[in-house]
Image (cartoon, rainbow, N blue to C red; front, side, top):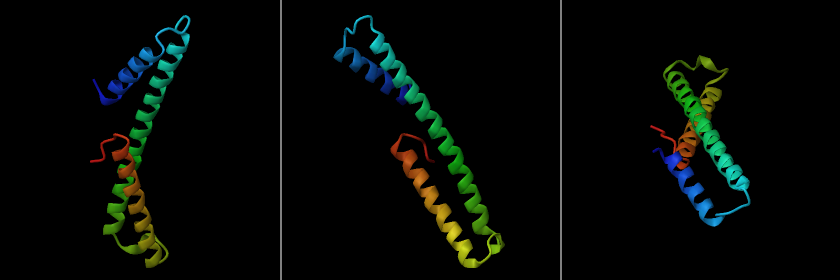
Length: 103
């Protein structure tokens, strides 16, 4: 069982404990469906963030090893690399915080 499915199972079990009867159970089904949808949404966002981060790391690596002709001036080029690195750092921190593998 994955960490996400474990979290969903624990949350739905807890919801069942807190609200054992809710008429015909419609509210519980709605809550469980919403939790599952949010977990799926989070997983999709984490994968997109991994893809974008990987591409950014590759671009940064390539640019940092090439000549500085990718920008109008050396100062602009250096700033571009700093901005890319800051974005890479934010991506890694976000993935680490929200359970994504940022290796």
